[in-house]
Amino acid sequence: MSTSVDLAYEQVRKMAANFEFKPAERINETELSKRLGASRTPLREAMNRLVAEGLLVFEGGRGFFCQSLNPDLLVHLYELREALETSAVRLAVERATGEQLQDIERYLSNIAPRYIDGTPAREIVSLDEEFHLKIASLAGNPELQNMIELTYERIRYVRWIAMRDKIDITHAAHQGIYEAIKARDVDAAIDAMREHIRTSHEEAIDTVEKAYSQLYVPRQQN
Amino acid sequence: MSTSVDLAYEQVRKMAANFEFKPAERINETELSKRLGASRTPLREAMNRLVAEGLLVFEGGRGFFCQSLNPDLLVHLYELREALETSAVRLAVERATGEQLQDIERYLSNIAPRYIDGTPAREIVSLDEEFHLKIASLAGNPELQNMIELTYERIRYVRWIAMRDKIDITHAAHQGIYEAIKARDVDAAIDAMREHIRTSHEEAIDTVEKAYSQLYVPRQQN
DNA sequence: GAGCACGTGTTTGTATGCAGAGTGGCTTCA
DNA sequence: TGAAGCCACTCTGCATACAAACACGTGCTC
Image (cartoon, rainbow over all chains, first blue to last red; front, side, top):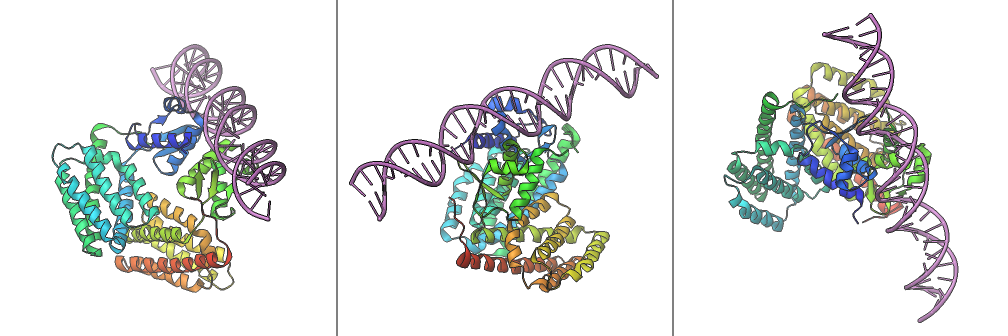
């Protein structure tokens, strides 16, 4: 069964992850509830879940805001991602079945043709996420997987901007991670994953810092 | 400013973390709202946050339930804890200032006398958490710290039961972790933290498995 | 001209009411 | 006697209403 709360949750979550709110923008509950075709009660319940997940911020007496991504937060989220994903890859090496590995291999060769210039950044990011979530699922730990997914949603919009010209490099990195897991080489797999995330991290930081200095400085609350 | 939602959130969070709901028990909103002196609307908003944090479970059409801790979930949460805390300790080695380290040292010697037989398990668990959160705060990453705290809350009740006779061992392990951080030895610090968590993990699993086989099997929903 | 006070319109915070789904017990029938 | 269906009661899901807090613009004062 899908309730009004679930529906609102999914929609607002998508809106937040797809950056349809301006950073640090106050979200008008009445207007949004009208747009979603529900009343404020279920909408607020949904938004409270998103606060706990870090996609929105709540300020008593003022309402809900889009969480703005400053460089510090981005560093923290990438560190979190590294913590979670290196552990996931460690567990994946231990637990992945041959069948699961074959599935990954098929997936990688299926999507290889998409990794060419001209593919939109959003699609590349989405493919990248898909690969990482597949690896995460090999770890056999739904809690870990869930946190990884959440962290992705919080950095996704930066990656849309950052993911340029890096297309073939990403694909090569994924291949490397996969090979290491297949070889059951824990250290190599962890190193490959860490290196891959750090590269992505640096690009993202670059992007945000450029955005901060050149374009637009979101207003900080608190 | 502290709203009704915040108040309800804090109280229900405490109740959940302190195991005042039976595992997998349905929570009666009307009754609980009366008990907390608020109406159902803010209570439901608070409970939705706790769902996102994993302390409660929501089932459409039936309401909110206390999340029950089965052995699988416990394994997953301990793996998560290991992922988060080994990374935290890595960052702590890099970033901790001398002043912060002195603070930890003072803390450790201040609480040393409490680590004796006869101290209630709940207090020992609380001291243990406090130490780990202090280490986590040295990492200088609020997102990481927040996830560590959340993970603690979800396993706390098992630790109350599991934490017996292990009192001096815990204290020794903490000393070891601290020494390694102070010596800026990343590998030693990570190993010490990992070993410490795994010991705790095994005890917790033991406890839950015993509880499952002997005492009480919470009803699984789903 | 700058800053403060006031008032109005807007938005949030929470209580409440009602419809409908869920639950459990009772009856009835095989 | 056991199981299935029905009925009544309870509880959730959501909309709405109202009060209180906030934001902003205007006018007054220094």
